[in-house]
Image (cartoon, rainbow, N blue to C red):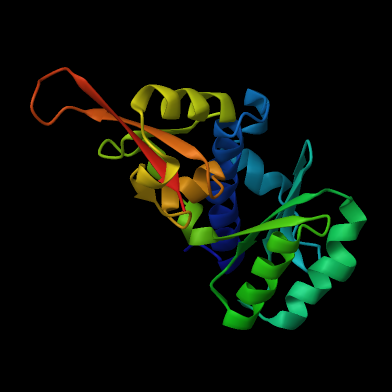
Length: 205
């Protein structure tokens, strides 16, 4: 029978690989050697940190797999005041086991809106056990550069307010790290013509 520690290790491993894929899709250089099979990961996995199951660092991003069963305001304060400064990275991805209080969410939104040196993203570990962008029915999404957005507005003769919207909280937009005001290009199979693609644009709000 699988032990509790093995079950935890398996969830961390699965979500770890998805996080690495997510970073790659955000144009972060992730070497192939960083993707581990479960046996290799389980043999090297050490659950010795008081606050986190695992910590990874890539470029200016630090990723924490939090041990706290429910993220409360005191835990956010611990991360912001004590843990995050140890790594001196401006971008934080925090993976949590289950729930987070509404007050904690409000504080994180305030931190992000005020741009006080760090930007924090929150994901549940269960959200990243699989990479939903690889699902056959999920169309390809990609974030457009500011230059591409200006070209699109120029050639479409649309005002920004007239572009169809997609919410920042959309799972694929969160995966890509999309921000309000960015333009998203969506490519999907045509519903009317076989072997044809359709392209749509959406504005993140």
